[in-house]
Image (cartoon, rainbow, N blue to C red):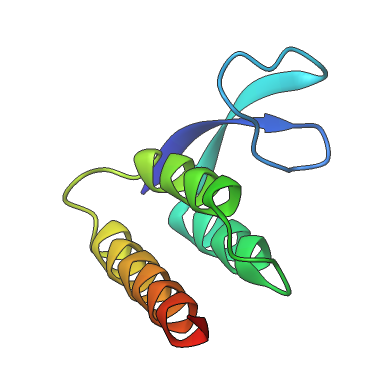
Length: 89
């Protein structure tokens, strides 16, 4: 199964409309999963990170089991962030 996404030459996913050194290529679900893991590794949880994660999810087919799993994971991460924020108050 393949997914079309926009990537830089170094393999990093780009937001739509970014123009430097980009080209189209097909990504496998395995590559999307790897990008997902690297996105959250040692990253600060903020809206920019969540936005990048959602763009990555948009590259998967709506019926994809990987998309469903990653959407669930993203929702859980958001809930934990919200809970931590509420505990600090």
